[in-house]
Amino acid sequence: MANDAHILNCNIAELQYQIASYEDEVAYKKLFYCVFPSLQNHAFAILHSRQLAEEVVSDVLIEVWKKRATLMEIENLKLYLFVSVRNGALKKLQQEKKTNKNASIQDLQIELISDYLQPDETIQLSETSRQINEAVQQLPPQCKLIYKLAKEDRLKYRDIASLLQISVKTIDNQLAIALKKLAEKLSLPRKQKK
Amino acid sequence: MLKNDRIWQLLARKLSNEATQAELDELSALLKNDEATASIAHTIEEHWNTNPDIDIEFLDATYLLHLKRMQEQGLIMGTPHQPDLFLEVPDNTGKVHTKKIKKLLFATALPLVAIIILLSWFFLHTPLSKTNQVSGNLVKAVELPNEIVTKNASKTKIVLPDGSVVWLNADTKLWYYKSFGNTLREVYLNGEAFFDVTKNPAKPFVIHTKLLDIKVLGTQFNVRSYPNDKTIETSLVRGLVQVTLHSRPDEKYFLKPNEKLVVLNTNTIDSLNVQKQVPAISKNLDDNIVAIKNLTPLQSNDSIKIETAWTKNRLCFTDENFEEVAHQLERWYDVQIVFKNNKYKDIRLNGSFVNETLTQALDALKFSTNFHYDIKDKTVTIY
Image 1 (spheres, each protein chain N blue to C red):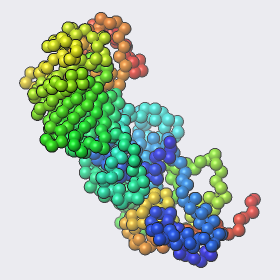
Image 2: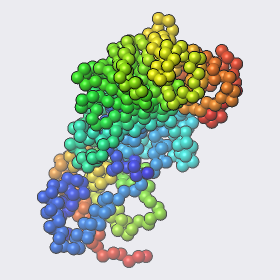
Image 3: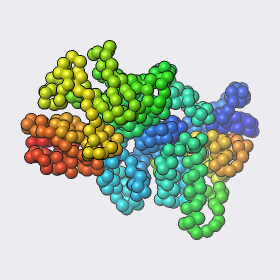
Image 4: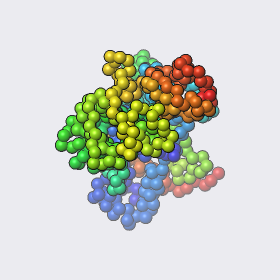
C-alpha cells in the first residue's frame, strides 16, 4: 500500500490528465503523495529547513490546482514541479536571509533519506547497503545530487540537466563517476566486524 | 577491472533508462568475461532498484496541512456541504508531526469524491506518453470500461472524449468503452447526471439506463435513474431527445424542451401507490410511463428548474413525499434515514437547500410538519 505513493509507482502524466480533464481531487491527492517527498527533499537541500521546504512545495502544488484548467499545456509536469520548487526555494532563501547571494549547487546539502521515507526497520540493513550508503554520502555535492535525482526521483538525464542548468554530458559523466566510486567501495576487502 | 570507466557509464545509462539496445548489449559483453565486476554491477543495480517505504502517516498529516493552506486561499477540496472539515487541524503547525495527532487527522480525512477512471486509451492518445518509456508498457490489451463513480455527498464534472460535459450527482456511476465515438457515442448510467452533449448529427449520443435508452444529437438534459427511486426521470432543457423503453422497443417518445418523462422503476413497484404518488396520464403499468410533465421552476419566473438545480449545488424538491425526499437527503448528506413511524413517509414536502447542514435542513423541514428526528453517527431516525 505504502509503495503506491512512491514516485516510482505513479504515472504523473496520467494524474495530470485526470486533474486537467476531470478536476479529479483524488488524482490531485495521489499526485501530492507521489511527488511531495522528492520535492520537499529538493527544497530542503536549498533551504536547510523542513518547515520552509514544506511551505515551498505546498505553494507549488497549490498553483497546480489553481491552473488545473490549463495543466495539459505543461509538457513535462515532473520537471516543471522540480524547477518550480527550485525557484521557489531560492526565492525563499533570499527573503529569509535578505541577501542577494545566489545559492550554488556546491552549497547544497543533499540528503538521500527524507522525513517521508522510512527504511524498513524490521530488516537489518545489509552490510552491502550500508557500504553503498556510506559511499554515496562521501560523493562530492554535485555528484551526490545527480545520483539522488536519477535514483530516488527517477528523473531523466535531460530533466536533471535542465533542472541543474548543466549539460547532459555532465550528467552522463557524473553518474558514471558516482557508480565507479560505489564499485570501488564494494570491491574493497570487507572490514572485520567489531 | 575497475579502470574500465565505460562499464560504469553504460551501467548508469542502463539504470536511468537512458541506454540504447546497442549500449545494453555492449555492457553485457563487457561484463561477460569479468565475473568480479559483473557481481559488483549487479549489487549496485539491486541497490538502485530498492527504495525505502513511504511514511504514509507523515504524508497524511502533511496533506491535511496542505488542504488547510488551500482553504485559507479559498480553494476548497471535497464537497461544499462540509465546510467545517478541517477545523480539527491544529493551528500550531509545528506540533502536527507527532504520530498520535496524525492518526487523529487521518480519521477525519475528507469524504473525497471517489473517482475511478480507467483511462487505458489515454496512453494511446496523449503525446506525453511518447516521452515516457514506462507508460508504454501499461497499455492493457483487455477492454475495460472507463468508469466514473461518485460517492454519497459528492458530485463531479467530467468531459467526455467528444467534448460533451457530464455532471454526475451523488452515488452515481457512468461508464463507456473505447468504442465510444466510433459510430455511436454510447455511455451507461446508474444514478443521476446532467448532460451537455456536443452537437454531432453523424454520431448520435446514446445513454443506456436500466429501463430505458435515450438518444440525442446535441442537447442539454438531465437523467435520474437511481435503483432505489420509484421513478426514472428524463428532463430536457434544450434540443430534442428520443427515449425508448426496454419493455417497448418499438415505441419512441420525444421530449421537447422544458418537458420531462417520468417512468416507473419496476424494481420498486411493490411499494408503490401509483395514484397517490404522481398524477398518472397512463395507468397501464405495462408500459411504465407515468407522465410527460413540464419542468418545475424553483420560483415563478425562475430559470432554475427543480430537476436540474443540483448542478447549481442546490438540493430542491416540491411536493414530493418524505420517503422520496429521504433518498435525496441520504445521497446529498451521505447518511441513512430510517422512519420509525410510517405515517411520515407520505408527508408532502417542499424544500430548497444550498449550503445548509443536515441539521439545518431537517429543522427547516420540521417547521412545516411535526416530526422529530435524532442523528446518531450517520443514521437519522425520523419519529
